[in-house]
Image (tube, rainbow, N blue to C red):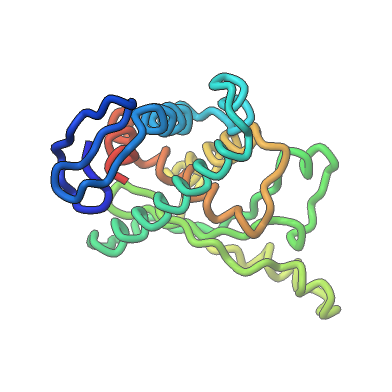
Length: 210
């Protein structure tokens, strides 16, 4: 373990189930550290906050808050990694995401979809969330939806690309949720991006370092 305040890695063991940093004297509860570890493992194992709250007998809100913190840190990590690497943009594509519920209701309007642009560069997928299109429907701009369909951005043979595989991965992974609000969709998108780009053991190492 590393102290989050001073980055020291040596501790005193206290009698009351706490440890104390030898450098800055900050105290940590071993019970809380174990709980945090279990939550991190649950996230890594693709469990939902509800599933894990029942498994660990913890409050759902506690798990959900920790999951949200992990997703936020992951989004920052992925951004930093993207800006560090050279860009080749061998694949690029625009994608309209519809939830499982929307598909069951046969919703087809692009105004109801989440608009995403994906790039595949240096054997990794990187995604950008585009502005919500719902407000464009109110502008009464006839033909705009048809225009979007005809002018969708994609690379050649897009059905054979890694991005094609990623869109399928994204849809499959988000099925377990009853719905993801647009305001938080970005962080779920980045979680999927992370889990698609990195091998399972590599994911755990990165999560622990975060």
